[in-house]
Image (tube, rainbow, N blue to C red; front, side, top):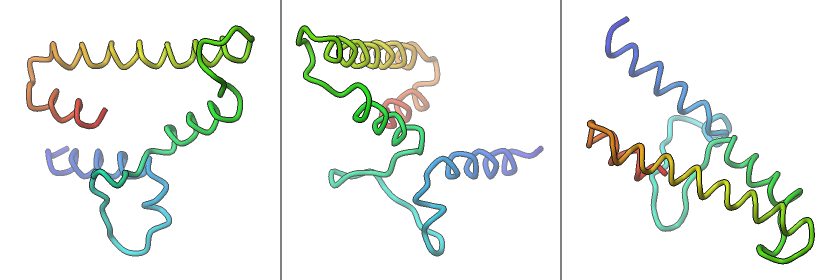
Length: 102
């Protein structure tokens, strides 16, 4: 497999994670900006699930709040692990791109 074929396959796999591209007519691209950005389906699903099943005031004493706080705390821990792994990466250009993506 050539580098161009690998790039095309990775591009198609990444693009397939964003439902907006399936619904869009023609070839289009979305760029990140202050007005918002598109998210992959798994992110939309996670946000939906959190809002429907775990969303509550953080730090309150009731069970739903405890669950919500735990979910948010776990998300913070995961981001810290990813960010630290990227900082330690020897490929600084890739690390910088992934940090922007996060």
